[in-house]
Structure formats: C-alpha cells, structure tokens
Amino acid sequence: MRQAGRYMAEYRAVREKFGFLELCHHPDAAAEVTITAVERLGVDAAIIFADILLVLEPMDVGLEFSPGDGPLLRRPVRTPADVARLAAYDTNDALAFVYEAVRRARQGLSGRVPLIGFSGAPFTLASYLIEGSGSRHYVQTKAFMYEHPGAWHDLLALLARLVNSYLSAQIAAGADAVQLFDSWVGCLSPDDYRAFVLPHSRAALDGLSSRVPVIHFGTGTGGLLGLMREAGGDVIGVDWRIALDAAWSVIGPDRAVQGNLDPVVLLAPPAEIRRQAAAVLARAARRPGHIFNLGHGILPETPVDHVRALVDAVHELSQSA
Image (tube, rainbow, N blue to C red; front, side):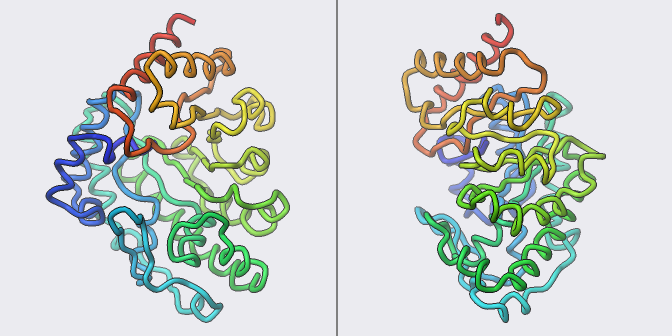
C-alpha cells in the first residue's frame, strides 16, 4: 500500500526534481522509487509507482495534483452531456510510460520480489470525475447515479473498458499481479453496489485472473465483501473496520485475503505495532492465502523505521507461529 511516498527521505529527494505527475511520466524515476522502497522496507512484493487516476488523464478532464490538496480535476463530469463528450482512447499509446516503468522496475528487481500493477476501479474513478476531487460523502456522485442512471452506466462501462485494457497492458509489460483499487466504494449500500457498480467492476477484471493473480480492494467495505467477491478477484482486500477472520468467513475459503492493519498503528511505538500485527496474524490462523498488508495507504507522517519494524515483526511472527 503506497510503498513509495512522502514519508521516505529517498522519495522526497526524487520529488525535488519532479512534480508528482511528472514523476509518474518518467519511467526511470518511477522505477527507481519503486525499487528503493522495496530495498528500504524489506517487503515481499513491489508496487509500481503510479497513481490510481492516471487512466483519467488522457480524457482531457484537467487532472492535476496540488500540494496538500491531492488530485483535482479542472473539468469534472456533472451532466449526461459531459459523459457523452468523454471518449475512449488507446491505452497502449496514452499510458505507455506506465508500462515502460513496469518493464524497468521488473528488470531492476531481477526477480527478487514480484511486481504489482494497479488501477483505480470504475466507481472510484467516476467519483473523482464527478466530484472533481476527493470527498467525504460523495453527494454529487450519488446524486448523479440516482438522477441519471443511463449516463452513469455509460460512464462506468467506458471506464471499465479502459481499466481492463490498462491492467492487461501492465501484465503484458511484466506485472506479476494487478490490484483494482475501489478506494471509495464503501460509501454505497449493498443494493446500490449490486445495481450500479458490480457489473462494471466485473467487466474491469474480465479475463485478468487467467493471466496473473488479481487483488480487489476497497475501504469501508465490510458490508460489501461478498459482492466484491462476486465482482471478481483472486484476493479480496480488507480494511481494519472488520476483523480479518470475520471478513474471511464472508469472502469464503476459496479466496485469498489481504489486510488488514490500521495505517495509524504505524504511528504507535514499535512494541504496539508488533502487538497489533500479532493480533492480525492470529485471526488469519495460518490459513493459506493471507497477504499481510495495511488496510489503506501509509500516512505521510509515518516514521520509516516503524514501517520496517512492522515488516520485520510480520516476518518473524509468521515464521515462529
């Protein structure tokens, strides 16, 4: 979860040379921060340095990243006519810089650990398109969904096609697994998820699991886990708002589970980090298919030594359990 970021001095040094989007567009730099994070943290897999919203950039919606404010879209989607103006594009051409970063990171890792590619999911991408930035309650997104269901489904169908092509190309470039981030879908009820999201998430993941393992992740999704499983994914990501064993009982024993430490725990003393990691591992009970991870991204103020302490604790506790 967000291995390279502001909490790392090495990353901040690279960012002195590049803006965020500029860094994403430079394959050598993106590969460098990907590999540096793995070497610094000692994790068991690398996550390519990119952003969940890159698939939106070629759609001429004015995507930019403002320091302290996160992503902004200067030309958000607010009407069905705005949806009609959006067009598909050739992901192989427009996002070639991501695939080159995957190739270079894969080469630089030399098989030491697998490399994970990723994209935002259709709902989360649509929420950014409609809100124009992050949101607490996604009022405009839900209002659009309810008021303009036809345009909503047109929008998510378009995004699903782009995401599927984008993830497929990351696999072709060398990604050993891919992850679909539905970061904000937890704001929906189960009925709304089934009606307005599930078919599009399924389309975004179509055919990928036959090539590499697929991780399907969301936050605040304790009530949606069964539906997310139905939408697809070999691994279902779980955040800290539901106990890991309870989540797994809903997801089912034939799926792997990823999670689920609260990222804020990494601000606690190392002894508490170790205790909380042990609690997550105890709930996993050494069942096959558990990927220990945070329930969301590392916070910018997190001490790097605390992340390393977590990784070391998980390795030690997993071997001795």
